[in-house]
Length: 165
Image: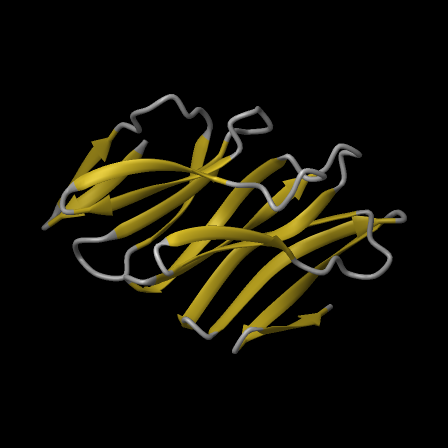
C-alpha cells in the first residue's frame, strides 16, 4: 500500500498487479513523479518498483544482479531527478548469503549490480541511500560474519565506489 499527501489530506493507494510483499522506500523528484521500492519478503517475485507518472502508479519488476543471486529486495530509493534514481538493497544467493546491491534507473531502464562485500563478512546488505545528483550517492548498510556485525558506508562518485567500514 502507498499513502499520498495532497494538500493536508493523506490518501491510501493499494498496489495493483500480481506482485506480493512490501514497499520500504519512496522518493519523489518533483510533485508529479515518485518511485517506491520493495520486495517479495523472500518469495519468488523479487524486487519491484512502483512509479507514479501522470497520476497513475505502474508496478515493474527489477532484475536480480545475476543467476547466482536470484532473490532481490530493495530497501531504499533516492531520485535526485526525473531521469535518475538509485535503490539500495540485498540480493540473496543460493548459499543463503546476502550481498549488497545497487539498482539504478538511467536512460529509461533499471539495472542492478552487486557492491563489494566488506572483507571478512559472510553476509551484508544496504538499508539506505541518498543521492545529491546522478553522479554522487551514499549508501549505508550492515555486514555480519565470523561472530561479529558492523555498519559500513559506500560512496559512489562519477561512476566509482569507495567502501568505508
